[in-house]
Length: 105
Image 1: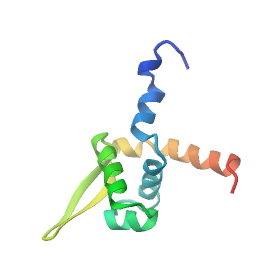
Image 2: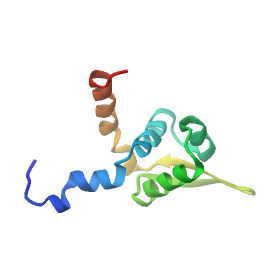
Image 3: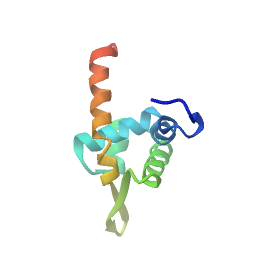
């Protein structure tokens, strides 16, 4: 790791996109269960609708998840990882392994 340009550091860019607990927990749900509906994510995570919606929009804007409509009347959507999102698998595995080894229960 070099320290040449910290304002445009890849770690900073990554944490700007993913750097909150809820984003990682939302991603966990996709890796464990696959595509998910908003209500299912909300039930599993216990997030307020505004918080969940904001995190999903941020992940969607970053190209990590995509929103797919499955009903027009009433409009309903599910969310799924994109190809870019699936490339986070080693990161999620590393976080899981680190948590199992170093984070107290």
